Amino acid sequence: YCDCGVDKFGFPSGWSYNDIWVDIVVILDTSEALGVDALEEAETLIESFISDGIADFLVTNSNALFYSRLGVISMSDRADVIYNLNMTKADSMQGKVSIKKGVAQINVVDAFEAALLMFNSGSKPERATARQVVYYITDSDAKNDLQYLDEFKASKGVVIVNREVARPALKELASEGYYYLNSDYMQGLQAFCEANCFCKPNKDTYDGADPTIKASG
Image (cartoon, rainbow, N blue to C red; front, side, top):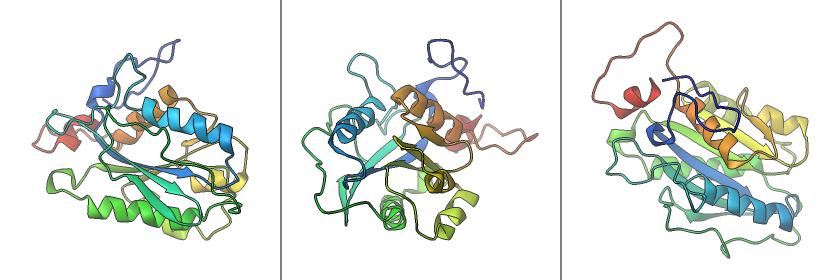
């Protein structure tokens, strides 16, 4: 499938969370730019990509036909790995991050490089063609040269930006159509579905052995 529409309640229409086959690294801004309240909301958001405590969403069980891997990086004046593409339903974000006082904002390119390192170190032959998604939760102003990220977006990567305050530079950071204001987990899951669908227009995929091909529809 490549139709990631939702019904009036925001639930999938014609697709399933269980069919998503992507690798995701969440970059969580822990500088003063984000703030304590927004950080707490972000912790809940990240957990909700997998489960809201009642329903399950992204499948992280590697024995499943389709599954996704979720990693989390806390970014202030340095990058700290919270989950190395191994976050599961049993894991929590609570108590693992805090705002770094004295750090006004993050360097979005340094954060991106940390995400790439996680992708590269966690590479597996069976996921060689899985779509890589970098999901920023940040209110830092992206004042860096973004050419490095543009190359990633032009190849096989997707950059999602979810933030509280409208900043033009952050919109440039995101892949086209993946810039959100105060996004909830359901909108995030829809974005992961869209990232999962990367067939070229007017092309039919073959039902081969690569789960990426099957999942992308």
